[in-house]
Image (cartoon, rainbow, N blue to C red; front, side):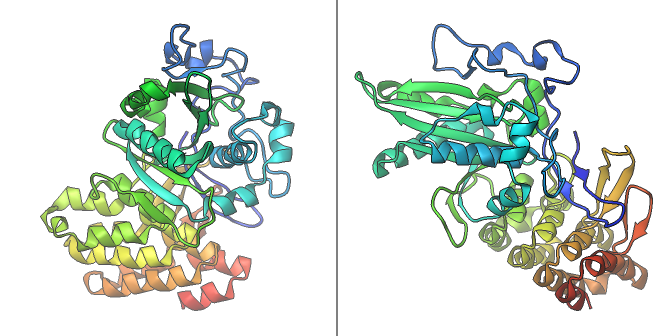
Length: 420
């Protein structure tokens, strides 16, 4: 399902949610035969060197997006469930008590959206991984674990529009250690896939691809196309700022820019801006790079403004300077207009990047965005500048809401001053 906007009619609040939460049916929804899942998920009785689900657990149970947080009433989506699973894995030495995942009450009582969002925005060690190279990255992480004496580790996996978790374990066996890989998908809430390799066969890990864990339906829904890029995030050690452990093969991939804008990875944006290869991009290629849309069409700049990544937005301005696009294209990119269907009423709504920054009180990001508009003001006529600054969003009732209103209703004085 496309991302949604969460809002209350009394207090308007927009939030871009890209989580995929209806790819396979929840158990208490009308069933689809075998959950619409192909035999790629069946247990292989000949070898455990291919991903499989345990026959002891229900692979069709999907509570992603089906439960609301007990305090905020915000739906608990894939990133919240994934981060809770990751915490359970890390705290229990790689064991998961699935009683905490098997019912709405269990999900609601154990998962806090506020805490999950705090973790989601926290720094980590970042691995950019091409979807064809998952195995190579996992192999390297296992070697790092061996070098540091780590027996288990869980990493968050973000595609451009879905959150998963990789759980890695080194198990001591009489005949030699085993490298065990768990892949947890919140759309299969109460189970995980498993694959294992003996030490003597560990080179086989390098051959794993994202394709090996998902059927065509899931790959398409999660944006796991062959030329796509995911990020693995290791947060098991506290960090003050994110560090990039593994760089993408192609810095000029729109999904790389999207991940960088979403995570506040300023270093990536600066590397792209400083690379002379950017001058070779023309027309549609340059527009696609700068828009940095995910599979739902959401601009990278919109997510950066929503998350308040001011330094990254400032670096992004250097890309805009080199774009040499026509004024209308630049305006579209800076506007970062997101068109979203509201799941509550199936109506279309619009929200702008500036609106997202104002409603979240990101004063520094608003100032930097203002500098971006000022730097490009010479190419816009008066009406276009007014449109960019007003940033009228449309809520589920069809009301036009100026961006400033969203800051005023929450009392964000610093954001209002920055907007001025």
